[in-house]
Structure formats: structure tokens, C-alpha cells
Image (tube, rainbow, N blue to C red; front, top):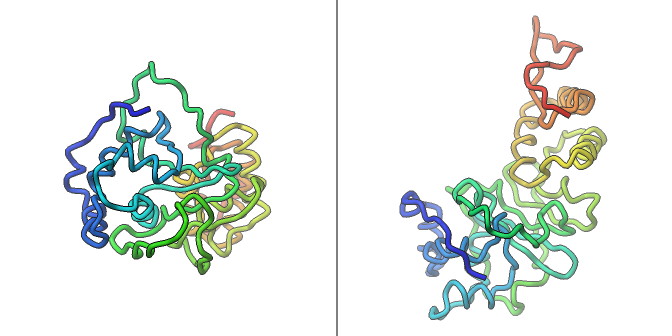
Amino acid sequence: MARIRTIKPELARHEPLFQAERETGLPIRFAWALLPTVCDREGRFKWRPRDLKLDILPYDDCDFSHVLDAWLTRGQVVKYRVGREWYGCILTFQKHQSINNKEPNSTLPGIDESEETEDYTNQAHSDPPPTREERVDDASGTRDERESHATSLEGKGREGKGKHANESRVLILHDSLPKAEWDEWMQKRKSKRWPCDALTLGKQLQILAEHDTETQRGMLNNSIQSTWQGVFPPKHVNGKVPADPPRTREFPS
């Protein structure tokens, strides 16, 4: 069911969308303005190109799966699978939309429940990858195999199978990240029902990536022991990291 949404004037100067439109020849910006109308209050939608085209571009002669790909490969949306159904989500949806309190709660699963994820949120918008070529399927199945870039945080989203690896798969992890401490911290987040979406985890990974492995391990352990939602850089005293964790940013348990 389509819904009334807000369009901000800044959208007219959204350069990444303009560049995508020039490169693909598709009505990227007009479709983007209407995409929120088919999203639920969490910014989620079913990844069904034919159905979406009927609601967004009913009179345009184009393959809507290519429009979705243009957004996906430029980090505007993420795509994830739960069971046999694929879903999409606008990560900045709640930042730009004011939701009516009477609107029903979302009935679509979130990215934290996904079994497989395609995510380009770390791609630099100023240097977007090319939109993929024509394909046979309806963009609802799995994609062609891709090369993995796991050397930095500025890579593609990683695909995987199984809920256990979902959060570690949402965004590329830094090579030196201590896996045991990260997994334990993620279990703590899940037990506390704290956000595990790509945007939240990406910010934490960027903080961790600025430090060496031993410091990362200490930061994660401090957050686990102190029940913090985030990870924080240690305070250095005379060039040494203090044994006690900082107490200035503690979150309630």
C-alpha cells in the first residue's frame, strides 16, 4: 500500500543520484523520490522489481531491476534475504521521514534477521561502480559471484549464509579485527536487543579500524565488561593505555 512521504528540497542537489542517472540513462531521481511511498515505517520494502515498477514507474519502458541495482551498487539501499524472500531497506529513511504515529508497525523482517546480505554502504559515492548488465532473472534470486575485497572498510558488502554470521557479514571487517572479541560483543548486543543494522555497525567498525589489533581487543573487552552500546578509543596517559575503561560514555544496561 502506497503512503504519503516527505521530499526534502536537498534531493534536487543529490549529486550521486544525478550521476547515476547520467550513467544509466534511467529515471533514477524520480524513482528515488517515490521509493519511500512503497516502504513501511522502517524504510523496508519487498525486493520485487515488477511490483515496484507498477507503483513507481508504471509508464516508463525500463527494467526496474536495473534501477534497483543502481541504488544498491551506490550504497543508497541494502538488499537482504530472509527465507526465500528478498527485501530492501533505505538506511537513511528515518533520518529524512517523519512517520505518522497511526501508521502500522512494520511486518517485514529487518536486516538483523537476514540470512544473506548484499550491501555497498561503504562504497564512496563519488566513485560508484558501474551498474550491472542485463540479466535473465527478475533480480529476486542470488547474484553472480563477485570478487571479495576484505582489505579495508571501503569495500563491498559480504554475502554469507546463516544467522550466526549475519552481523559480521553486514559490512566488511578490518583484517586485524579480533574475531573472538567481536563475536562476544555482538552476542551481548543481541541479548540486550541493541541495534545491529549496517549503519550502526559500520560506525563502530570505522572506530576500531583506526587502532591496532591489541587495542581493538581491549576496546571490545571494555565495552563487553562495562555493558556499553558502542566501542570507544582508549585514553592514553604518557603514551600508555590505562587498564581501567573510560567511564564518560557509559550506557545504561
